[in-house]
Length: 194
Image (cartoon, rainbow, N blue to C red; front, side):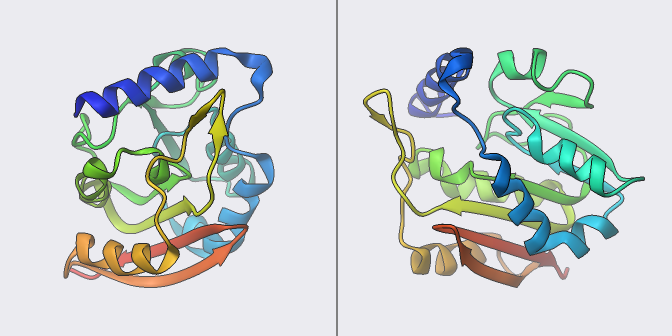
């Protein structure tokens, strides 16, 4: 992991520690994820929510899709201990390879990629793909997000650039199944074909 990425994780640890700040994945966006890829999520036996934040998406999947096993990963230790308690969880800081070496039917990484320093992006996408046995679900914000005097979306790119880069980074083993722009966010679903 680059020094820049380690500094970003430290920044988010401080940001999330401020419980009154209200920072985190907005509640309505998790419902967009289910609307965008609900059939694939419902059919998955094992789901991994990467950089799960406060765990809203994982809990919504558990509520709406009974019988699915949902695991979460997070780079911010405080969230693992507090917000994600009670869920199968482990520490994982993208772009590092997954420390468990596991495989999940569907890997979701929602509103995370735009927070990665740009030089870590390709390796992060490859690390996500390495643990997804069938589906990869990404959401990438396309808007700036200043917080406490600092831009948190340090990896902003136009939607068209993401649409070109993601398939290239995923390679021949993956095909784009669906891509949409909703709520100033790129929603991207890819399926493993090899």
